[in-house]
Length: 415
Ligand code: MYA
Image (cartoon, rainbow, N blue to C red; front, side, top):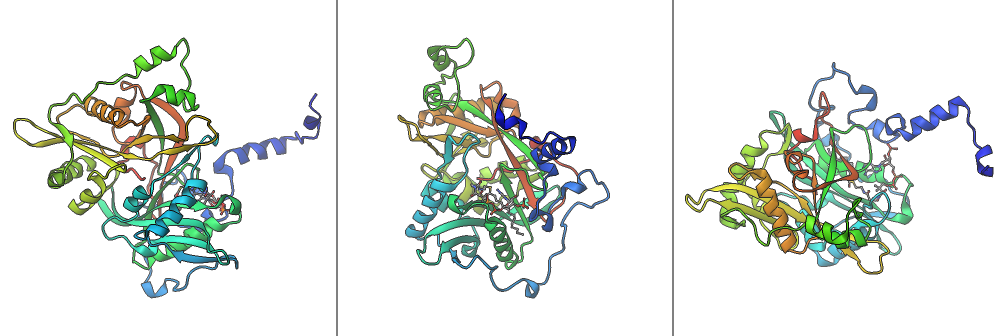
């Protein structure tokens, strides 16, 4: 027998405690328990009203000074218009941001992407928050907010979308993250905004929904070589390559790249479409111009323009988010496209998404990813997506929903 085994405490009490620890709902959340978010103890409670958990307070009551950091560190506001700052943020995230469970891949957001994602209409520079080591001035942590209007059922709420929370690998588990979250909250409050939306791979109190990733191989040989996917049972490489083959060009007549002149039509399409979901962004033309107009190597968008009437009837989009491949001899980057907002009114969604896959393949992406939000479940199986192992939890800060949502009731994609 393994000598380690006899050392183990196998009392019933210990077994129960270990089981509870393994379930995140049984875990203590010393920080999150203090925050205005849905608490695990209230799951299923029907007596609590929907809407803000805490009321807004007068701005004069918002703390005027930043929260205290450990003595060796200092706050910095990151100017994302500065190439130098953008480079520092890029490098911090490239080396320390989100990895998969097996630590084989790590997100590698490009500088162009960060500059786009963090500077939407009406953004606040003060919400791009860094932490530096006082002596070396090295950037060691980061968190961001951007303003957004999010509709929850019938109500449009001004929120912050919080993203890119990152603490350098060497500074983990020192409770820096709660200080960063408190500081971004303070700076959001100073702009008289009291709600936020965010996503995370970890379970926290309490998800409004949990979405699953689906992956469509575009370059199956590379995906198998780097360990992203495996050869199916009774499959050869050449049969696999054939299985995932796509047409050379999109099938839908009038399918073309979105242009500036399409902004009014795309805004109308998107607004009508997103009205079907319980939680979704409320976009105006400025938002659409920023978020949906193509930007090289950042965001691709396409419309279907009717060849007869020249009406814009459908729309699809995906963003570019490569991952570093950790420790592979032959490849260093996985080129991934992520499904963003898609609207079908005339072209069947299945055909529209097959066209999106086709152009992504033309643009040399290795894989096309989609969450099972909106109507995405209706096309994933047919279009040969496979379910991923990662889950993405969606959260609202200071806004209670009576009940968790199905992912298909969610019309929101965060970057
Ligand atoms: S999600 C992406 C998060 N980033 C990564 O996963 C990158 C790699 N990991 C890291 O850099 C670190 O592990 C991070 C934690 C920084 C994540 N969201 O400092 P700690 C809680 C929220 O000792 P560290 C994204 O960017 C944890 O439960 N809380 O831990 C959206 C514990 O609290 P509690 C998280 O590992 C971010 C405490 O932190 C997350 O060194 C949305 C431990 O702190 C997480 N992803 O650092 C932020 N991970 O004891 C919330 C851990 O209570 C925004 N924790 O369980 C809220 C809205 C604010 C604005 C409101 C305006 C009104």
